[in-house]
Length: 486
Image 1 (cartoon, rainbow, N blue to C red):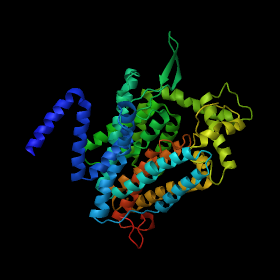
Image 2: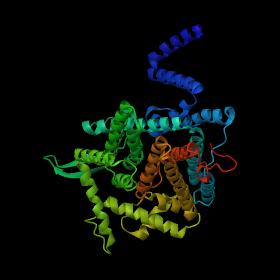
Image 3: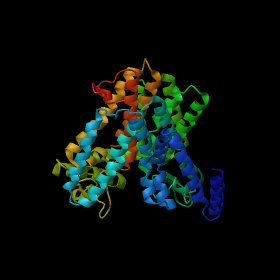
Image 4: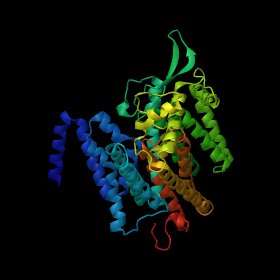
């Protein structure tokens, strides 16, 4: 072993002269491999960190990493899965959402079979199998304990903080030419702030983080805000509470710097839900509101951006004045209404996965507000987009999966709030995360879907774990008489 260690070190030193990054990557991979063998849960935490930071995609796009290595990341979950199912002989977790997820998979396949471009649709089906169906069941069957669930929550919070920092620095320094290794990708999206200088109008850039798209970056960061809030409330360690406060603040600032109007609506919905359901104490709610006021005061450009939401009211009349309604709003409304018309014409099986943009122009002409000819356009609405591509049955099944998960989380909260408040504060924030996604889904279609399926899987695991720990392994936990769920 000593000889092998010496020879390996010499070889690494020689290689480092020409490819230092390769040596660092290889050494990191070797260290990670040893850690996963000794502690399989490391694979779960690593997979979640890589996927939610979009690091695998960044590595492929900006650093020449082969695509197959990026595709290998979810397979890390096979290690803890094998430990639990084969070594520990634990049963497969099968919550009430399981049969509906299987049905959703078959709807994807059936709709693709009748697609006008079967190859294109089948590629989308494969993506759903890997990033949706597969990732969902893998995570659900490896996150089995409260301790691991808490670790997963912290990993998500820390990852959200780390991917927010480069974008915040990019905005503060106006260093938009720097890619920050791909984790703060520049965007062409910008808007006028209403201020002018001797040079001309002052324009505010909208940031995209490692995702490369403003609204998506806002959407995935927003789902992490309730996780950070509840870790700040629940953690006993002063250090962890401080980390949670700092991380949540940075994540919120990251959301603000995208200047996403949909994210702002989702943020307001989050605060209203926390207040209406009395999920936190009054002093915590006041602190949250004050923190948001400070953040918005620091970035007054967001107020200018949100003022454009008033343009939607101008669309209510019979005659739309394009002078008062911006092109972005007209385009979004056109795409949404076009998706609705697609559902009317293809209610049973839709037009096929990933096929709406092919039909967009035809149906947008019928809407007639603002048609983007020869442009790649999506529905910009989660629900109408799914309905257009998978038909009404696909939309109904998707909604059932989402609503059952939220119902399980509500049941878990009621069951644990008195007996196990620590578990209640682990499960409840995931309910709020899904709610924010559902709200922002009113303005965004299902793209970068792996973030949604990842969060849905962790949320389902949180409900199952909580219900099991408080002794309510009923139908909501998927355990019944056959003890199918852990």
